[in-house]
Image 1 (cartoon, helix red, strand yellow):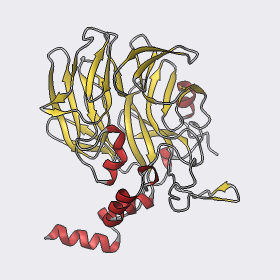
Image 2 (cartoon, rainbow, N blue to C red):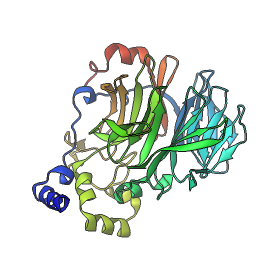
Image 3 (cartoon, rainbow, N blue to C red):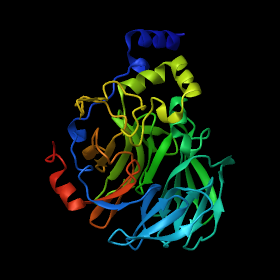
Length: 369
């Protein structure tokens, strides 16, 4: 009874779960043009995920292939699969774990050719991130049990909360579920002492242990995706889109949302996008329009590019941006390769390369416009 009254009160006043307020880009999230101005290392359609092998070579998932890149950005196909590759992770034995076609397949290394498609008796539906731990186990983000990977916007608009974090031991072929009921898990990373998982629809990071799932970073201004370790401790967190008040409002208007999904093509839904500005029929997203050929400075982001550097204490240190009107949006992966940060902009079909020395030296607060 109390919860029913509270929901009615929040809806009347626009508070609590009924609030449509979104965090602003300020402090460690203060906008800059570092992603927009970043050198382009490679450009090709279909790029999906990045991983760095034990010999320091960059690999990428693209379509049904796994690519190996040389230092100049040239690529070679090193493995092909029967379905699109959704996630990629490198093992210390030189092999890879690949998520494709509802299965996780081991390519190269001591487990070459092994695969599995279920954990704890449940099929792998939406594997979108993998990470190999220092102990040789595999962490798995299975984003949704109700929607496949390509239908992530359906899961958002349906208020999906069926994501799982899983752990698989290739040596024993044993697996366990670390967490379930997540609001679209889209990234997982362990550093030996803890396992972090991103919840895209809840806009937060969780720390997982055997007893609790504790939010350690809340109220992010966008939708978090994959996580990777950083030199000297801490992490890189990719955010594939920014939040808007319009979408927060639509998520609370159930009749409108259902009618929109039933009568319109998904590309035109009021939902986050990996890129925008290519079709005049896109939803305007409030004030996101041009006036006399100039994008309004207050335009909310239908798509956005954002990477956040987290310290070992999980506090945001600084961030890298491609702002509204930019090209390098839809950031789904950021990994360190030697002296560089390699960033995958799925919206632009590009891999960007930024010198770590420049980022860590300036803390990215001195480059604004």
